[in-house]
Image 1 (spheres, rainbow, N blue to C red):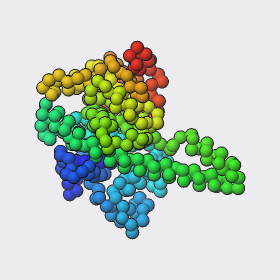
Image 2: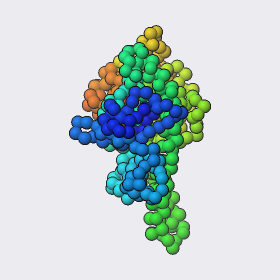
Image 3: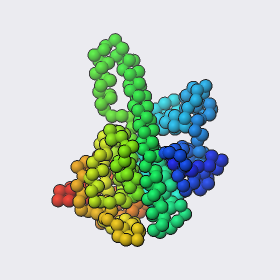
Image 4: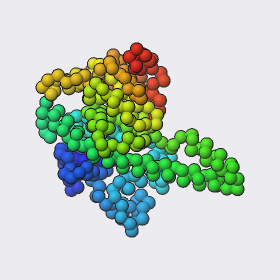
Length: 359
């Protein structure tokens, strides 16, 4: 899988605990990319150079005589995994950008991303911000991560900008392939060419691009949406899934309603979420109700709210998209659909009095 990060990195190290630091990179919104693979029970990390080598360029079909940033290499690799390009697989996977939450070191992040790939058959790219409290614990760790989240807003915006370029390349390649097919079939019939091309383009893109934000990752997203650097017209994702959001419920519609998406914006809630209940006390005084566990004032005009409260195997889980909660088929089916860009609330019951879907 691929990691994009604003953590400090050490290119000479190959374990996740040594290659990635716990502090933001110095410099305005700088990002680094890394290629990560599982080797037995360990992770192997290759921090990619800012400019890729000629050998790397050649391996993904780029001209080795030219210079390219690491993002060009990763884009080509992801295009192949999506089912396109010279080294592509017959059946591609949908792409998921995963933004993790509070108090996650890189081993936690990679293990969770791997579970997302295995459980939902998606290709995960991770945005990892310095969310492990700088070695602190408890209230100090929580405050430290909140500061790092705010410091990571510009970097996260750059991630979305780069992903926008990647999605554009995905689309351009798909359109080019359709044009070649149309030319082979209808090169002497312009009307049939146009009709075939229009129908194929409208059917679907070859894969969907989705984003999942967990816990304090939603706090980071909130502050990006409210910042002056955010481009509100950016339409990147088919689905956006905001899970167990550790940010204020109060007035959340003011920033949630700015979010652009193609299919659905899901906000998931668990009233019994133990981590969110605890987070209300972590600042030394009671915080306001958290968006991910408060079943009132659900007043966004664009979000689809999903209630996981009281579901078998969910309990007080904060990460109810993995492990024990997935014994509940309704939970598994929801996240499988949502993280693959599909409509996920079809089999739920809607409660209009609270504006929420019940699993």
